[in-house]
Image (cartoon, rainbow, N blue to C red; front, top):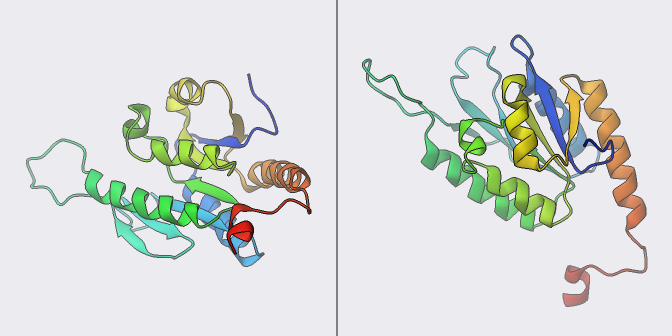
Length: 187
């Protein structure tokens, strides 16, 4: 079921673990080292004032992903419109070229095939690896969503780096130096 070199990785976390910090540092380090990490990273649940906010990668733009609701509201505070707008911007950046897509969460909307689920398919169809934070209680749903074609990573930087090193090395070796990209042909 799991393939250690699969281009789709789930950073599975349990309560008390902070996948946001791991994903943020990972994406920042990749971009600092000449790779192009693209996506969205939630500001940590343990960060004061984070309250459903996220950062776009690589721009650093911060977004509020929650709706201000009255004191009597009990529903989800996620601003789906804001999330979808962020998804559209990320898709445009992906189309400009990326080495990896980083997605902040596999949440309720993604379980329903909504939210940022379309970005995962978009990236994979372009042969761009994807890493996403998945809460352990949604992992069975994630397996269904991914059709079993995923890597399950521990929620730590070492596991994420080990996966990336395998995937990026394999993807680099598959590119032939004599093969022109579509952009190179058009130029």
